Image (cartoon, rainbow over the protein chains, first blue to last red):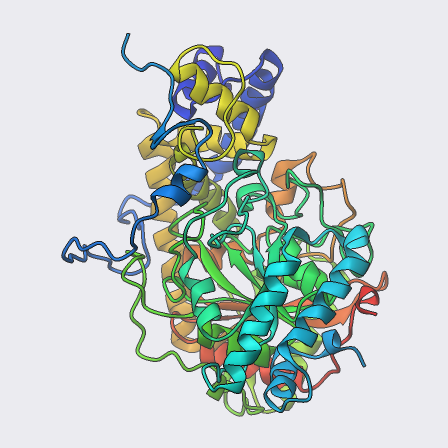
Length: 97
Length: 486
């Protein structure tokens, strides 16, 4: 395996991904990412120095419209999905201590 | 003959002619589901009461002239990544295991306006990440041709439900082959439309620049009819494209005289099963007999599509799936210590292995220091792949090849080696990168009795050419119903 993923990298990626991995999962992820990168490195065979990155195949541009509410009041249905609810609010853990 | 063995358009005609009511059609589908689900497990959710009351409403609407579409009253199944107002939408994930949307995705809404009767939601690989429908949190779907084999994925539930004749047609979504590959494995027909043709509003995003909703049905006529209903310009989807026309059914003509068909030599190399190869080339011969001009050519860059795809799709997935945090909907972990710990534990417990694998890879390729080397490199490769197709479509109307290198593998064979599983998408993935339309339709069975799929690829907005070629080929063979269709 040409790409060796360090413990620090896995920790850092775990923070970015907001995932808490067990020791076993971390080892597995190191191996998985390393193998995938070895495979992805195939792209380096291509000379892309003169090619612009293409995010979309069509030329999209921003479409502006007036900010008019068209979908009515979905408050009750939205709140019905709340993992924890207090009256008309979503309950979350304390965010500022 | 069972109502469920009819195509969607045939059943729609009978309903219109008052030979069958929409309620009888819905009941026939629900009976089939009742009988077959233990074997096939195509559905995550079946809502009997809602389906029957909707069928009564549609029947009244047909009689009063509100619903005139050919699909009015015909029962449909929806892949479980499309939001349905008031009906559970799980993406086959624990993290959305209790999520009931308060709005309906635009594609489904278009069907509802045409008088569709929704039976329920179909099983899929979790968040559409997989090629076998084994990564579902609600158990694997089985292939109706042989329950020891996978139905393909990620729209495996939709394709299996059509093949098992539990519904008349279904909607799937295709990010790297997720409609075409399971259609091939299940012996049904599926279209991945040109990017931007069907609104993604209400489709739970995996790789937003690649995702497209499309039809799955028994034949090409059904697929063209369904596509005509679901395709629309939608201001709620910023990547929706206003097409010049939304007519697809006029292309249902048994006429390919002079149609130029290119066969990429690169699609017939190592890894392609001989029986698949023979069946696909035999299909090309049939089209040639009907007057199409068929020749081989070098497409190039085929082996770069999968690595480019996994970088782009995982990058987009890591961003798209950041919203699942246990705050406003879905699963929330029981015990946690503060906000960040709640996010992390919720996500770690709520997502399955393959989803976490892709979020990790996506977060890595987008992280500072690696963004240029991996993410931008993949986007540059995508531009080259698009150019290769542009060049091919200067010479050819349609590109013909297999939908997948093999027929359906056995359950349990694929997940242990992710790269091997990813290689199974080699013929479908570049179509998503280039935004092109593609169709998969049955062209034979292998010695094990499993279906083989033929893929036809068109240039952007040229669905009609692939529909015409597919329809012409379809006329050369009888539709073969799966053993589970009885």
